[in-house]
Length: 430
Image (cartoon, rainbow, N blue to C red):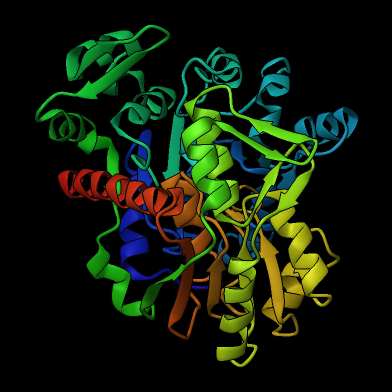
């Protein structure tokens, strides 16, 4: 059986000594390993009789079953995905660890359950206390005395997200009512169609202080020397701005008989991001520039065809990748992750929402290219973390293709702003 690093042992002890806890750790720090260790010891000492693990689907199928034999071979683990009958068989079977995906929480809440310990892997999936699956599961979580939340992106999209995550772990941390939470720590800006809440001065530090007793933050100094550096390289590219400027100004663009019309600022922002990538949906895609793919060709050539992950956000970007690179592999291909980690895949395409959590790709290469950026810092960090994580032996290079004077630059600035909030929150919890 493998051994934990000292900082992982400290985190496992933190879990063992508390009924309710949250482990905040960057991608690749080994949250699954330390949690399995704590789970094993809590079962051994009869503080828990049966565990429920809730995780994104790919993490359910590709991470927990592979990691459990390494860190807690005594556990009997089964994955509760698939048809309702298969899920029921697992739920009522003999496994003392049942792993299920977040999409099945509403179904799970309708079943007869016998768990006294629960793990929320990627706790941010339950940041919205108004969501249907949150409400459904909140009704059945009470008998689960031991609750553990794992995340690497606690405040990635703002302080407001913290409430739901804390409520599902322990309602004594920030209270039961999000309205009361907002009234205490935020000021309200009322608009025609919605309310916007802005954190009050000192709110972040005050919230972090309240939840600190239940929260373990892995210190960067404990593991940063164990990982090679991660280098972010913006690659500015240019294109003919005629179509982009027309859409930005008029909210309308015409290609022959095809008309692209944006009904509001949110829609036009999406259209501008598409145009910054060289195309726009009309609804069928129309290409106006190949500048990003030409830059990608250059990057691949400069890196001497090093094994590379290409991150896309739009289906048309994936279609163009497939048209240009016949050897391209996607996660849907047979044994894609295994083949990548064996070093036999030269080019693999990822979407942040399908590869942002739990997939280990650090053994197959060290180069990543973003064709376009997600707005979510959580997705961005988690995607980068597929390469920059424990086990990576080489410096990681992340290339960001951004079209000059477009929304690409706005998104990159927004990610930086959200990162600063996240860093402040982590410092407050130490």
